[in-house]
Image (cartoon, rainbow, N blue to C red; front, side, top):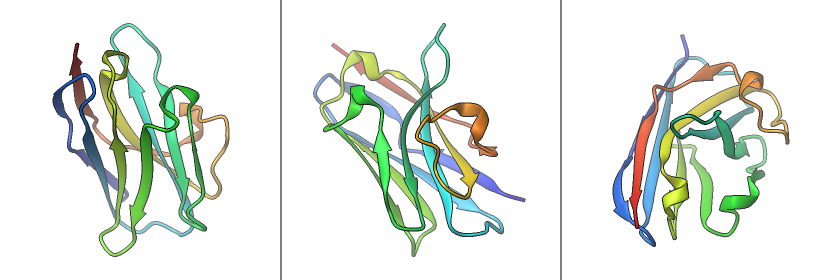
Length: 125
């Protein structure tokens, strides 16, 4: 049974930083793709970033490029999303998701097999 557990959400002022963590448990065939998604009230869930554990490569949605960093700690089975220069538009529930195999560049939610329960990020102006 694969389980993903997010943590690290909270409330910050615009310009601040947060680091989200996604701990993964269970038997997971490597390499795999780990993505971060977010969903604001009344909006669809959108892909934010992904990392491919095979080689550490990844990508970001345009709105977070240069501000967010996704990376993995292999020793702890955790994938992080470092979020800097946060904006009110970044406020949302953030979810990590796992997909076996390579990472699709489209970052569509239906392509992922397992999901965490989400962690809330609030950014005040």
